[in-house]
Length: 66
Image 1 (cartoon, rainbow, N blue to C red):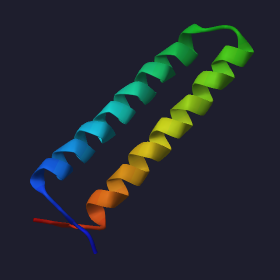
Image 2 (image 1 turned 30 degrees about the vertical axis):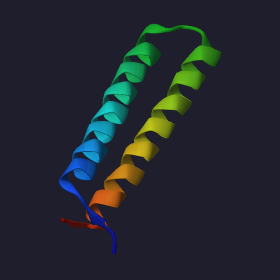
Image 3 (image 1 turned 90 degrees about the horizontal axis):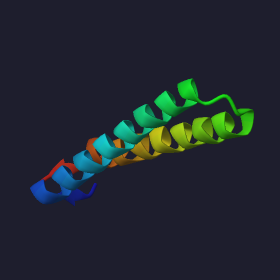
Image 4 (image 1 turned 90 degrees about the vertical axis):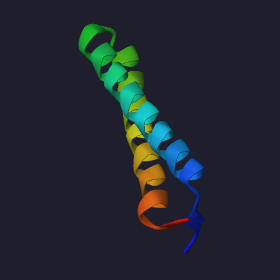
């Protein structure tokens, strides 16, 4: 099990927050656009950012803090 420093933990938390903020922004875009292709692209990007946030969260839950 990997050990994270406080700085690494903070960086992971910041990146998780950025992924969540970007997904929320993209959801707003989905709600505003009418073009089906653009809407689909935004939805795909939302899923990718949410998956990235889950992966980053896994690094926190699967480690010890130094």
